[in-house]
Length: 459
Ligand SMILES: [Cu+2]
Image (cartoon, rainbow, N blue to C red; front, side, top):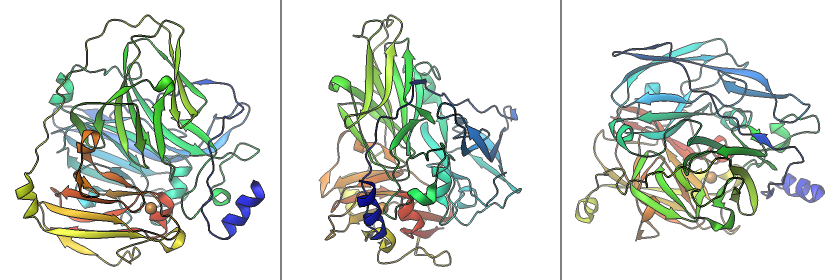
């Protein structure tokens, strides 16, 4: 297998690496800390976020060199609030430049942390903005051109929770770490001495690891004490797509997508999460007995185990209404201007509209506060094609259709990243509320670093 992989790698062919059960004991899931503000009063919320290198105890008896925000791997949950004036002091203590990209956050391009905003080692930037968007689960990750994939792989990623009056009043699980649990899903490969070797594992069509980690924990488990548990899923992997389900095909309810709550819960038995996508789901374990265990799976690989350790308390049912989402009628949508984006190629030949990212080229302009339809086409390929997660900075959009069919269920929620299957075409309703130069790109991070990205000016 190794030799076959090496030959494929030399030819630049993507090598499918399956997740394997790692020969390590089970560990209690790491629950990231909640970031403590430097200041939090009526007028200002101030956080300090430091990108740094550290050592993490992932494998028994070994220390892995990793990077993280304010800690050695990943980072604390950063809580923001709609309407709150916010200041973020972002410091780079890595030994290379980085950027602080607030994925999904609707802030002006100057604050967005795209590739134009590299912070040199030892330097910092101060961002000030008002949170204008509704409650949602966003994330922070680096975005320096051609270095994003390596920096994320080595550990830089943290969740951002935006809350608002609606999320305050919803009767849903919200006890952090108890029944509102963050799950950052990633895959990495460890060397014999327990290190990450990005260069060795690099694949032009997306680096894959053979070991799944959640919140940086190997073979993780969580003890459940409640009957309904909200899981905030983030696919924080460089390129792996997950097909999430639970053992015994237990159904669950999705309550939120990338940028906010769905209008009502959507019952599912599986969901696909492409890189950078988030999904908030609620797992119902009220039928379990104390001592029962269920697993969350990717295919048949167990990502995490949940042990019911207390008699599930009788909980209220989930609300049937979670949110209201303003939509345009078909007639209104038909009148909007349309832009087309053709995703093509593989490995180092990936392009959007036959172009590769050029820092000095603005690919197009668009107007502030004027909705458009963006048609994204995952072009047919002789090689069979790939899934491309298409991400747009600076906004949340609605998916209108897939292959011409109006979307339903969880596809109707607010999104900033949409996974396109091979040969698939999606149409998005998109509008920008903040100005500046923003990126659109494939969130397969190796594709992004290989230039499957463009930029546009909102004014
Ligand atoms: Cu891609």
